[in-house]
Image 1 (cartoon, rainbow, N blue to C red):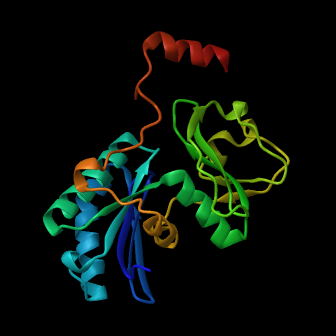
Image 2 (cartoon, rainbow, N blue to C red; image 1 turned 180 degrees about the horizontal axis):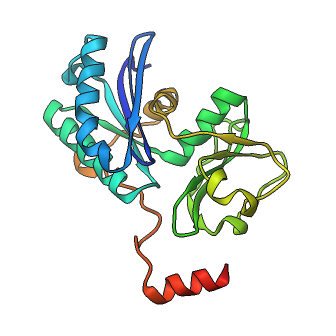
Image 3 (cartoon, one colour; image 1 turned 135 degrees about the vertical axis):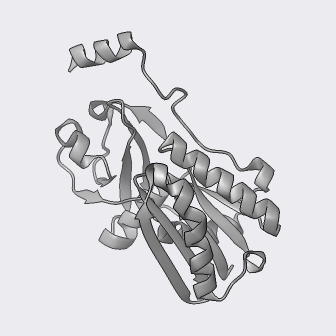
Length: 227
């Protein structure tokens, strides 16, 4: 089991960074979005110093690859690539929806989770995970309107989309607020590392899911009329 790990996520409005050194876990959060690009590296440097580690001593660097904010994903990937190239450390791309589900499992004991993140533009990113299965099955994140989500019996909802789309999300299940935290990524890391999921810095890319960031005037008008 790897003992010296750095993880960070900038896919939402909350920046999350964590370092594991043996049994010690250090984590910090801050303002994400446009602010993440200026605060992420200083926060990483501060946590590594507190843990008594240098970048070259890390066994791997985990980062949230998406889906999420396009700007945030580009920030996470570029920082991960720069640190990985500079220190010669392998990278571990982690799906943000999997990290959301893991956070719900850790905090609320949820075993079957439909992770949902606000994708803006009247849409959500989602993926279902079953931690009762061993290992949890591989799933492909999807992008849909909130009302198009299908909730399998026994699953709970977890994520950050409740305030924006509460009444449009599936009813009849528990709802747990959860974000893709760096601490969640560190809990997922040992299994992923054992499965050989690291990549070289040159192969660390965002998972966008959506292939466009803006609607045309006609699309915005159509969406407004439909609502």
